[in-house]
Length: 208
Ligand code: DC
Image 1 (tube, rainbow, N blue to C red):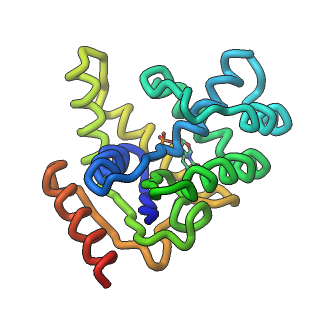
Image 2: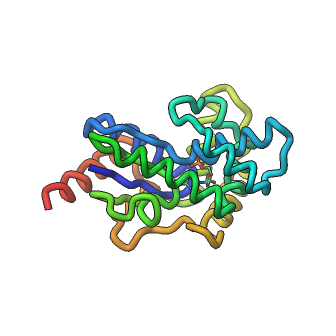
Image 3: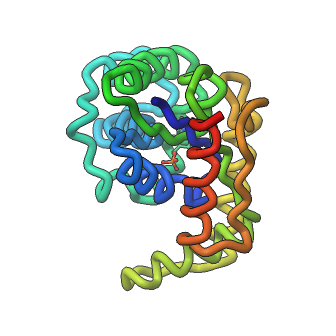
């Protein structure tokens, strides 16, 4: 069983993916972390983010079990990840890794931007999780403030819009809803409501 979840930054797809994996007893991969890990390695070595050859080499040595989410969540790493994610050869390498993860029993939940369209086109069920840019910016702002970090709603909103544009307009594997994906718009939902809606969609798809 494979659950494919796509959607823009701060849509809640990561939380939903983790909770769905727990609920259905599946493994979970946040594929954004794979792009972040490569971007972070390039930044740490002071190498240009467009260096495709080195990025591919780094992807080949990536250990999915050793990606530190707390470090990779940094804002500047997210921006850099969105840039390296435009490199076609890097995507090919990371997609192979993600597909291997998805294929191992008992199945998995993968979340990202191109899971339903490229990584797992034959997934058991596909969700496209979205919310208005304003709702996503508000959530991201509240999340940072609750951790005692600084957050400016306006600049977060601008960042999200810029990232959405880059992720959905790139030529290789742009973020888009797969034709057979269920749309889940969480703008007016809290996380519990969104989770219940996602469980219902998956359960119905499995019963069909
Ligand atoms: O989901 P995230 O914010 O951690 O993702 C960081 C960047 O990685 C995102 O801006 C685009 C890229 N990405 C991608 O191109 N394809 C994926 N499957 C996951 C992430």
